Image (cartoon, rainbow, N blue to C red; front, top):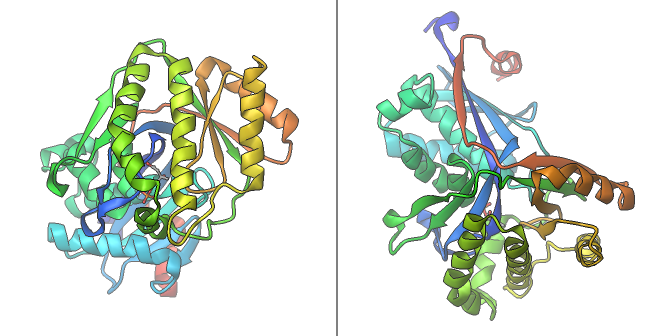
Length: 355
Ligand code: PMV
């Protein structure tokens, strides 16, 4: 293949923030979760991944501007996922990949959802030479199929393949997992004001922490109550009632972290600075000054869910009291995008020469 004819496939997949958390797996090998979950697909917090075929013996991966060597811990998960997809789908070609997040990675802003989602989409586009999502669908890769393939890399990635509010039903077997979106009133538009307390990568991976959940005495009671919680959350969204949704997602956050803290080994993602911010949110809201509710994933950073019209004011109030923290404003988004370019990403040209 001549250099000029090799195309670069560019996938953009958003992150998502869970309102009902995916926590614990029934079958790790098939990424079968222990319960249903529900998230909001984000808009600007996303991963942009490029993929192009190459003749070398190995896949090359450049992450956030730096070429990763195959034995580096950070390259393990993405490269294993590419190998697994190659085996499942029967493609042979090696790939040059670049991946860039529009937000800090590995600290509880669900970079694994967008990262593994974008990797899946870009790789399959390069292998099939599909220039957009419609062409991919014509080749048998519907969003539903792409989502299940992405799920094998990171469970939460599957929810990023749909717009808006997405329920991931665990189903009665690994093969019967489904995704379903919740329709909301047209004027109900949510924002996610992301408060970045720390960009340090988390000390325990979510894979390890998922495993630890089963040993928590709180885990089985949590699973028993999930269906009712999901029904209430979906109903609040369908009604467009933030005052009903907010308390549900805050209780859910505390419940997930209680499971995490009482697992074996116990893990603590909610450190002192995060707890202080959560208390502050509740106090300000009780004082009638703060129309936002918190949720926290597997990391120290806090997502404040509010109406889009209130997002700038919420962000400003946080900045006023916590000037050291970075505050990003995101909102509900539309899901993945894909396009093709004939240019080769410059950084990869250099990386290929060095190997
Ligand atoms: O997809 P994973 O293995 O990174 O797990 C994600 C878990 C949470 O982000 C904490 C919750 C969720 O549902 O996204």
